[in-house]
Length: 232
Image 1 (cartoon, helix red, strand yellow):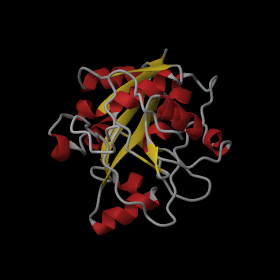
Image 2 (cartoon, helix red, strand yellow):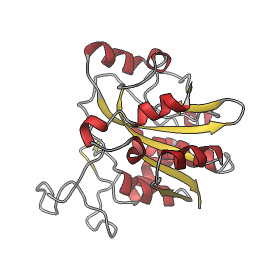
Image 3 (cartoon, rainbow, N blue to C red):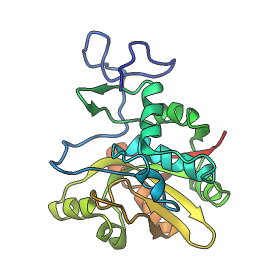
Image 4 (cartoon, one colour):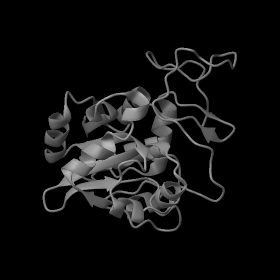
């Protein structure tokens, strides 16, 4: 992906044109050092094969955006992780030396517009529940695997490993609601290898606890770590 010397209006990049750290930049998604041999994929909770078509394994923000966009478009528009990555690049996200910077919510919203979606902040937690039950998708900025229910950790090899080590990482996940299934959590790091068996069912209370996992880092309520995605 190419770097953008002139970011879109309202976007603050991590570094200035001279390469210095930009003091105005706020990164809502911290990234840990990569783990050797560990790859990530965000697959759709309804249609896992749509990411496998592109064979693209990359970071959680754009991949979650692709999954959310596919969901709200009812797979009439079937976006791959690569579509999400390219949309983020077009929106001003930088990739230096092959290592992408973390994607914050304002930039992710710009990327989602390129996937024919709109993203907005919820007013409160109830707003999130109503949005999901009306067919919209939710992207959550989490501190994984804090507050993950046991079955979600057991399904996620990477989260299980970090849980045992006492570590956590800034991360984004995608969540959607199906009337016959309930709330489904799609984490872009499920097994980290091969075809992902993907998406775990969570309760409303478990979802709220997962969304509150960054409270220690930000001090914000659960709904402050969420954006709602809908069809544009």
